[in-house]
Length: 68
Image 1 (cartoon, rainbow, N blue to C red):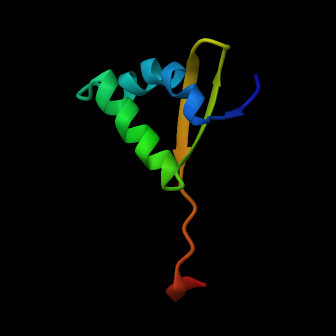
Image 2 (spheres, one colour; image 1 turned 135 degrees about the horizontal axis):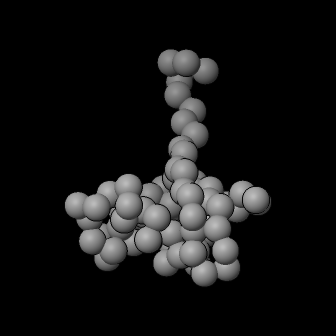
């Protein structure tokens, strides 16, 4: 399987997998939160088909003055 780096255009295919991880959030909340975080430098990788992600992982790279 191939890992894909998600873009804002991929958000809708990520929602079903994210709802499994965050069942207390609605699809609309997840969409809004994810797009906002992606605009702030949050990255999402996923494995899936053209229509749906089967697995999702998120990461953020931080550059901090105190640690270099």
